[in-house]
Amino acid sequence: MSRSSQAKLILENDLFKECLVTLKKNYSDALFEQTGVNDNHAREKLWLAYQVLGKVENHFKEILETGKLAQKQLADFHKQGKKF
Image 1 (cartoon, rainbow, N blue to C red):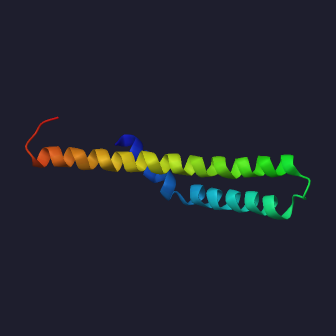
Image 2 (image 1 turned 180 degrees about the vertical axis):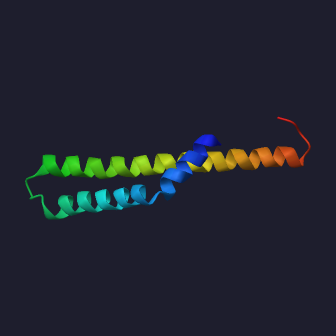
Image 3 (image 1 turned 90 degrees about the vertical axis):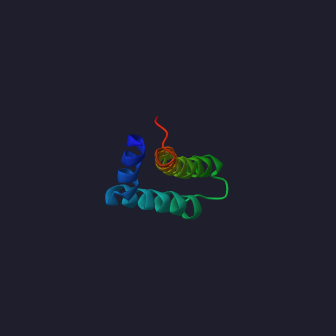
């Protein structure tokens, strides 16, 4: 649950959110506006960078959701009178 709290802080951090938006825009602009028809290598690198950025964001979201689930399960155990 501690990791979940940390992930939440990161995902809600204005600087982190700004970085994600800026990098996604930069990568997509470069991909669609700055590469030519025969520039396969550059397009592949930009596409990969964009995808990795999304995976980093999703990883933080998964940590957050896993923590929420663990917290709910722990609360359910306590409601049932079980000790962990």
